[in-house]
Image 1 (cartoon, helix red, strand yellow):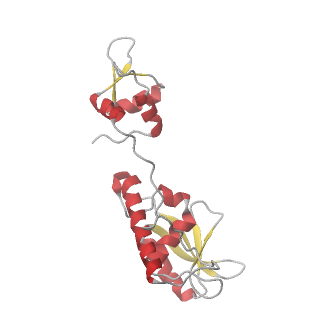
Image 2 (cartoon, one colour; image 1 turned 180 degrees about the vertical axis):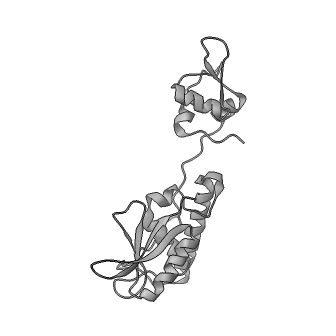
Image 3 (cartoon, one colour; image 1 turned 90 degrees about the vertical axis):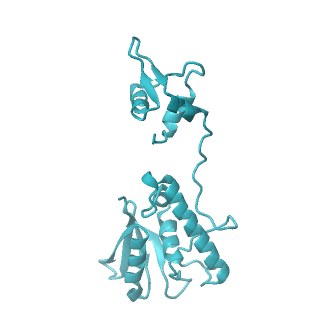
Length: 207
C-alpha cells in the first residue's frame, strides 16, 4: 500500500499540471514522490517528473482533516493533572467523560501512529505531555489530588519529553508507574536530591 504523502509533498502534487500531471519541486521532493510510487521520472531529456496513477488519485482525493484532540462525548474535556481547586473526586458523569476521552486518544493513536499502533503515545501526547499522562492515570482509575491530600499530581519537568508524577502517599507511586508503562510510557521511581521527595519520572515510549 502506498503511504500517504506529507503535507509538503501533497502541496507539490496539488500544484501538478492538471492535464499532464507534470510536477515542479525540489530534487528531494520529487525523489521522495518517486520513492512512494506517486511520481515517475521521464527517461528522455529534460527528465521531467509526472504523477503516476496513484499520484493522480491522491490529488483527486479529499484531503484528510487534521487529527482532533481527544474529547469526551459532549465535546468538552480537560484532564485532571492534580491540585485543581474544583477537582471532583469522582462521579459517574466524570467516569464516562474520562472513558470517552481515553477511547478518543486510542483512536488518535491508531490514526496517526505509523502502522496504526495504539500501544505507544502519538504526536498529540508528545506535544501535551502533562495532559496526556494525567489522562492515562485517571482513565486507569487513579484519583487526582485535590487542593490538599493524597492523589496524583502531574507536573512538567526541564527534561525533554518527560513529566514528573507525585503523590503524598508514596506507596501509590509504584502503581502510577505501572499504569503509565501499560499506557505506552517509560516510567521509573526517583528521589529528588535536595528534598528527598519520591516521584515518578515518565516519558512517552517511541517503539
